[in-house]
Length: 194
Image 1 (cartoon, rainbow, N blue to C red):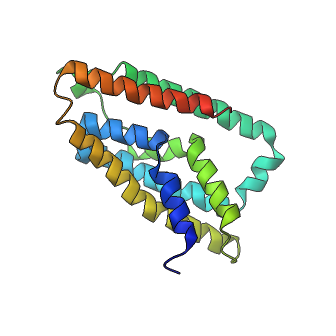
Image 2 (tube, rainbow, N blue to C red):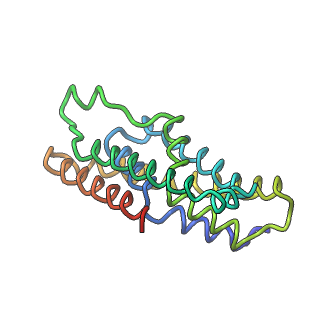
C-alpha cells in the first residue's frame, strides 16, 4: 500500500537529528558528497539490515537478555564518544585533512549495530506497524522500507553538509561547526542511558 503509515513513521524517525544525521552532515561538510558516498551507502545498508532483523523478532532476544542490551548501550556510547572526539579535534589544514578519510561502507554499516536511534525506530516500527505476514515477509517489508526512505534522508543530510562548505571558509568557522557536531554526537552517547 503506497500510503502505509509505516512510511511516514520511518521518514520522521530517520530524517530527524540523530547520530547518522550528525555524522553524514559533518562528513559531507568535511569531505564532500562524492567522498562520503561509501559511508552513506553503508548507513543505508546497515539500517536496512537492522530493520530487517527487527522483523525477524530480534526484539524478543533483547528483552530476554538484558545483559546484551547493556553491552550494546556501552558499545554505542563508547563508539559515539570516540567519533565525537574525532570531530572535536578535526583539522582542515592542508596535509592533515588530506590524510583523514570519511567512514567506509563497512564502517557505516557496522555502526548501525550500536546506533541506539536506529534500533529504537526499527523496534517501534516493528511493533506499531505489523505487516501481518510471517517473519521473513516482515523482515523484507521493514528492511526495504527503511533502506528506501533512508537513502533519501542520508542523501539530503550529506548534501546539506557539502553545501555548508561554502559557509565554512575559515578555520575558525570550520572549528565551530565541527565542535557543534561533536557536542551533538556526544550528547547522543549520554542519552543512550536515559
